[in-house]
Image 1 (cartoon, helix red, strand yellow):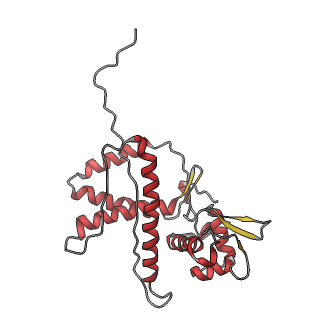
Image 2 (image 1 turned 45 degrees about the vertical axis):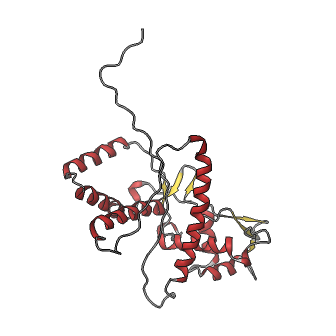
Image 3 (image 1 turned 120 degrees about the vertical axis):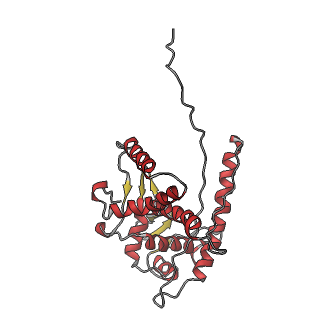
Length: 261
């Protein structure tokens, strides 16, 4: 998977601006001064000055052509593979697909309406760690029905950056633009300030299971409501779920430290 140094990121200033712009606007309308914002940004940059670049950029310059639109397309392909009757076995598990023929990987691409050829799509899914060739390269099997964006200590940058930007733009819209009834975007949360640590694993499993069910239902609704390819320009619309865990802030010690005797 290609790895790009921070100094070679194409359009890096625009990417950073698009992420920070709605955050800065939210802070400004909340009453924070320009000086306060710039000071804290400089402090954060200094804090992470030695952080190694671990982001992976999959773009046209590296031959993979993976932008956000393509990520969405691949996510739909994985959904079809894991849910459509023609591509799952009797136990409901995704089949190992041959590269050609009926019920093949090529047939899956046609069903999912993928825009690129099977070889190109296979390369992208392999690069993301979503699929693996098996049976001496004659078939391909699904490793995960969720598009993997973190591989080891590396991560695919575009989906993560877009998630931050989109979340910030949702809050910005509700605070600054969605003031009339019906114009606000949904932004709700469920939280517990005293979760039993022994229940964390069970809660996490519950959230993943029910969250995935909700996303699959939303995915089907969005697909059924999309415009026919090539006929008219549609609206980019999506729903995101996330988990947050607020860690307690460390209390700052006051006064000189006592030396041990």
